[in-house]
Image (cartoon, rainbow, N blue to C red; front, side, top):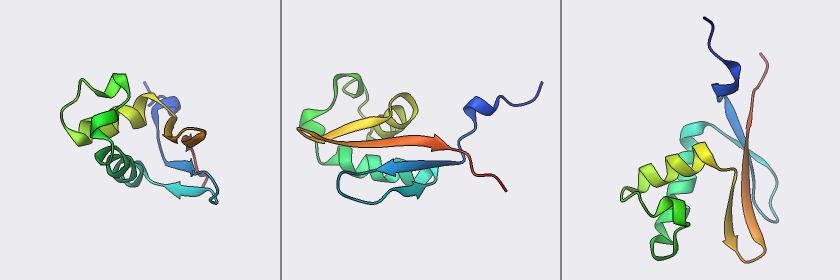
Length: 85
């Protein structure tokens, strides 16, 4: 059975408020999310509070969501994109 294309993550497009879109690999996005979460360990989204490891928090967020509120009214968003070769 061939791999299901729905679960193949080539790149992510990341949208930050007031900035141009950026393309990141899954690992690059993981690093960016971990850095953002490191700054807010005392105010994590409820679904991330069960993870004690920062990498696990970032990976769960990357794999199960597509946005993170940075400040009230400002949200970071990311979406999987597949680049044709």
